[in-house]
Image (cartoon, rainbow, N blue to C red; front, side, top):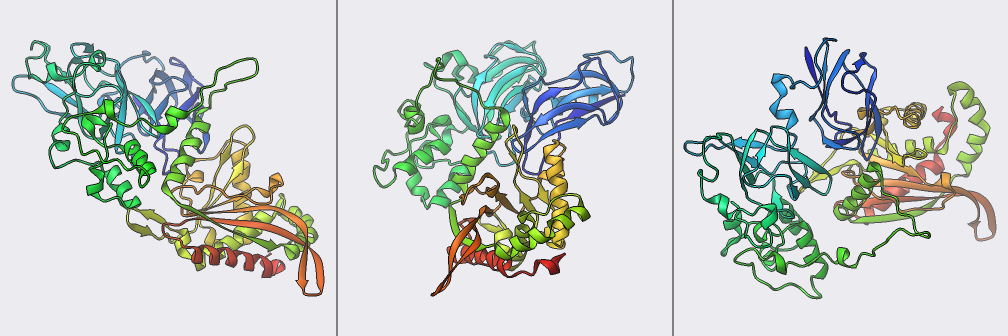
Length: 539
């Protein structure tokens, strides 16, 4: 019996994974729970065990390829004599092997035509950009053969054909951005019908080689002509967020499909708004040649390798982290409240108790354990800091799940999550954190370990840094950062100066819903807990 292996979901917000290494090849035998492959995301690198014992009969994707969650990546047959390279099992043949080519059957009269629409490349993705067509009108295509390549701000994917047949029409050219669900091509499955006989749209469609001379005809073209203009949900959301009225959107020249305004057009307009606002009315027909170019791309420096310059490509994790950090800054207006904490009492307690604690638990007592405990108390007092934003709604979470950033040498940063931290005492928090840190450094973190965080803590003090202003981990509303503990002269009253163990703490929060008052009171609550707690009573 054949068993399909699909790309697993490595966390609740993860929509794809990159295959970094196959431990088995087609034709190899594998035991149950034996490592089958390694997968990398922007948050975790994991070894994936085989769910069954059997023979690898198909491997769908090579090392280095990025695949959407739920897509077929391999097939295992529990029959050791099974042939290698055969077709996938019937129940999953079309759906999993066509990751993003979401299709709907729309046969024309006397023919069997399959419409190919722009796939949704993730739950928050509203459009995609066609970067390359591998086929042109008139070409034959096999099922699962690469049809085109699509790019979004989160992923680049090769899209296989959902059916075998002849390309009847291509409605959008390379470089165009198309909304999810919009028809981009059709494939004729009835090869007895001459090419083009099903309709006249083929002659008007732009093939990849005709983009300079042929105007693309798209179903959505009418929506942007005349007085009524179509805007994607993403552009409408951005307009609402930045206070741009729909009437003002008409002033933006679109560079997307059929002159449609896309995210880049909107952000470019927003950057120039007030100083040199665009006043061009909506074009009656596509005017991509006149579309504004992205300032950053035009001014970006060009580097070339030499004996004094080395160019090293980012790995997949670093590229994903970079995209997520930009996305976070674009999503949340970050505000930082910073103050100092007198850690003298905790330093004194830890110095006297750390050896006993290690004897009891087998690992070291750190200041992080006290800080995490103090954060839980503050999150209980200010539940909005533990919330998230969903459109115009605030989502309050009943559980406090603390993410704790862990530096993994050579592998960037991971943020495992202490689930239900509000139900743990300080010793329970310490035990949970120690387990996660050990798993992170051994690259044994699971999907569950990395998901569900409601608030995050990061410690830059271990690097000898006094203070930092971190980036919020979306969709959370805040992150807490501390620096190193440093002996500092402090005025205790008008007549005395004492040497105290001082630590700086930063609370970074999303100013969309957390104002300076709440953000600062939250920080003060944490500080007060750390300075006044009786640590001996907590153990």
